[in-house]
Image 1 (tube, helix red, strand yellow):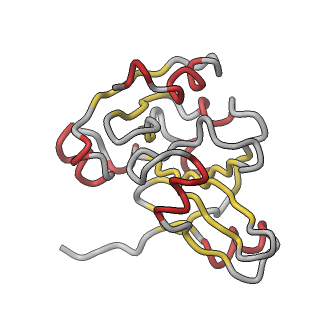
Image 2 (spheres, one colour):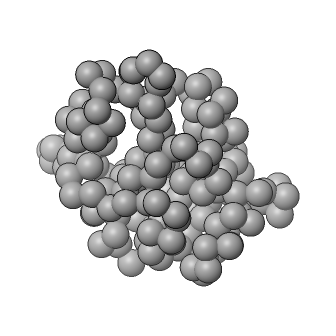
Length: 166
C-alpha cells in the first residue's frame, strides 16, 4: 500500500506538494489509468528507463508526456554517448529501480541514474507520475521533477506523435 511506499517518502522530502491517487494495479498503465480515473493523457508523464549499450551499461530515466515519443535513437543515445540505446527491458528496469513497469517514477532511483525531463512536461499545470508501485500515482506540479538532485530539462528529448485521423 502507498503508506508503506518509500518512493512517496522520498518525493515528500523534495518539498513540492503532491497528491497520491490509489489505483487498481491492473489499471496502472497510462492509457488504462487515464480512462478509469478521469485524467488526461496530456497530463500523464511517463518515466522510462533507457539503457545505453556500452561497457559498462549506462542508464538514464527519461520523463516524457504520454502524448509524445521518447527520442531514444537520437537525443537520448547522443547524450548517453553510446552507439546504441534502447528501452531497458522490464526485468532489468525492476532490478535497477526496484519498480515494476506501470509504477516507475524518477523518485528514489539509484544515484548513478540521471533524470532527464522533456521540456514539454514542464509546460503542464500538473502531471501524473508513477508512484513507485502499480497501486498508486503521484499528481503534482511539474516542478517536483526539477527538485530532484541533478535532474535536467531538455528540449526535444521526446518527439511529437503524428496526428491520427479518426
